[in-house]
Amino acid sequence: MEIRHLRCFLAVADELHFGRAAARLHMTQPPLSQQVRSLERELGTRLFERSSRRVALTAAGEALLAPARRILDEEAVASRVVDAARVGQVGRVRIGFAGTTAYGVLPTLRRRVAREFPGIEMVLHSQVYSEAAAGLVQDGELEFGFVSLPVRPALDWLPLTVERLVCALPAGHRLSEADHVDITELAAEEFVAFPHARGSAVRDLVMRACHDAGFTPDVVQESPDPFSLLTMVAADVGVALVLESAGRVQLDQVVIRPLRDDVQLAVGLAWSRPAVSPAVLTVLDVARRTFPVAAGTP
Image 1: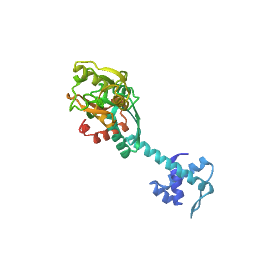
Image 2: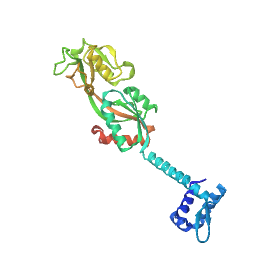
Image 3: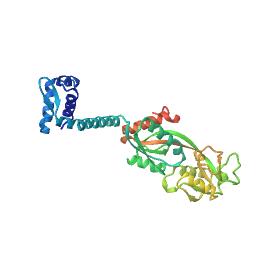
Image 4: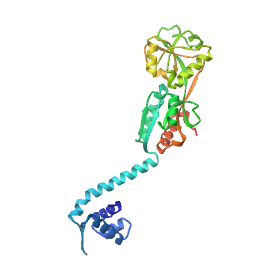
């Protein structure tokens, strides 16, 4: 049973006139009659009673009406879905992220994509640090990853924001009321930091900043996420250098102070060149329109 046969059957059933049904389908009457007869042969029964004066549905024709309409409706839905996928209006996009930068950017991006393109499903994978995210994107396990910039040559990237390091101190710390903290003043402190083995760009940036200041930080404990890290600071386990967006995590026993030196981290969205789907391009377009730093980026 073919879709074209059902389309012809329904046109005749609606009009109860082969001539008007043929005109509605933009075809001549003989081919229409052939299509209906072909369907009747396939089903082994007559669907219409025909005479020189009238056309009427048989009992079998009446029974076929509802299923035929459902089939054509589903065919129309399938066609629309395929068209939407082709132009990037539907699809599944996986995004890896970690840290407070993503917490600030990702909700805005996801909400706008959901509002403008509800057929695109964004699947979010948390605690995927920058280097790990880049690897998963390159391997095709993720469509996007939040990464520090610049990123590995095999990937394309879109800059989203620039963050600065700040100092997180336990309340009552000797430096908690300072206007600025010089990194050299932290040389004798115990630190809490993101895990060394997880590919954290913030961890790498902190280590470089301390080395540039002439010391290696004494990391006494590690934490996989900003909230846990700042909880350790509040508990006086140690101090931490974190991105300024970590200030969104409000803890009463933590004081955030700017650094005297301007230590920056550029953050962007990375994707793999060979694996760009229409849905990925759609999300990229939304990102470019949403974040000022990305505006005008080729």
